Image (tube, rainbow, N blue to C red; front, side, top):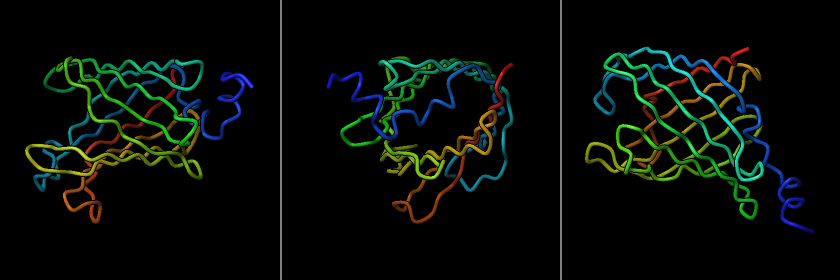
Length: 165
């Protein structure tokens, strides 16, 4: 069997197919993270997602129209068929020489959970991404940080996507 046939038959490889296309994004992000802050910033953005790696990955181009100025960012996702997991990397256009540590995880029952160990403002943290798909045209992404190894979480960024027609 060639690798193309193998990859198209692997469970999980199509998990992000719902996300291919163009999206309007409503962002909600805590003004300050890990600071007991309850003030949310709300802003808009756009995301364009395409398949790469013959369908075993995807990439998106993002415009985030934050109150203090717009910026671009990109996400790269790749599926490891042997392990059945996705890896997700974030590249912030304001810091083009820094690629975030990869988040790793999978979808179970239409919920994607992805985790990584990282640092933020000098703190060792656990990071969690949650993807939910209440409808095919309105998925949601959430980011949370934990300073206690995942016992408690602070959700600090939520993106609600609406498919562009």
